[in-house]
Image 1 (cartoon, helix red, strand yellow):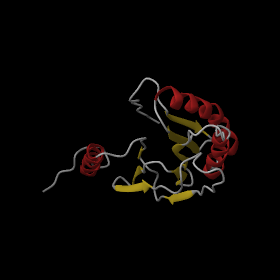
Image 2: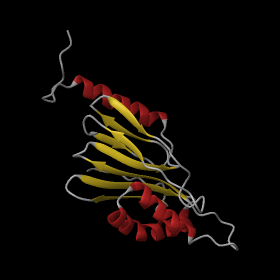
Image 3: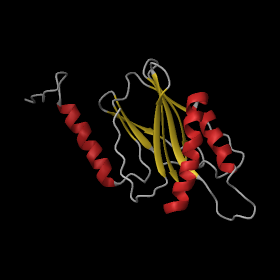
Length: 186
């Protein structure tokens, strides 16, 4: 697994984490805390302190996000008018069953490259975590013929440059044969 992380500030409210659940399942989460700077990074660190245990003990995306929502509720106070919430996408990738089960809680869509040519969006399915006290988060499931080779997750809205770059990747991959050499077109 490879990852690139480019925060816009030294103190940020963005975080990612992955965990090998067992021999064929991996839990991956990416979230973006509301706000910027010190306040966002402090709330981010609070959630990161409970996040790892939630992923290890609960695994199921619906249960993990519901647990994080419960912890976010602890931050709310009737005196405090600051709403604390974050968008998140949490995936459980099963390489044996060839499934990706996920919850997208108000986060920008992620994308998976499947079968070397098909782009599958990881769509939004609910409101952000901590936005509403009692909210039912629902799992979404993608059953795949083959495992995804590439997964693109982000905390900001996908821009045209990133889409163009991904399209170039698809075009380049479609020109390669099984040996990784460029196909000859007559």
